Image (cartoon, rainbow, N blue to C red; front, side, top):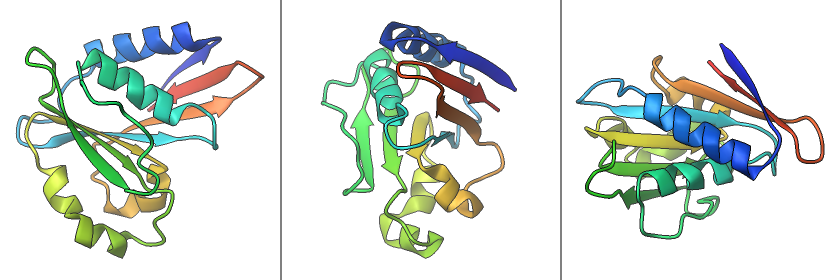
Amino acid sequence: MKKITIKNLSDLENFAKDFLFNLKQVSADKTTIIALSGSLGAGKTTFVQLFAKELDVKEVVTSPTYTILKQYETGEDAKFKSLIHMDAYRLDSTEELNPLRFDEFLNQPNTLMCIEWAEKIKEALPEDVINISIVVTGEDLREITVS
């Protein structure tokens, strides 16, 4: 388990850049999943936006709270060829994942999936998920725990 204190957006950007640089794909055949947890306003979407920037995503990345899931193509030289951004906040059960073709998204090669509010669908996630918790500890302070 790794903990880091974030004091501003620049710290968060540096952390996201370093994290992505050091991130190893779980498998060439599977999606690498990052489960993000934290209260409203903690910075989960901002974190995914910073990943998207590092992966050279050209589209504007916004919270998929109402669409639940959005897939983005990354730049030619990016570490992953695709970024999937999911927000499970509005889901009441894992059965709601079926119409989204969630199982298919879990098995896309060379893909990074970031799931906000992942704790709501924990039982549907594989064991090799990377968990990132963002906790607000002050007005501009965040504590990030990676496990």
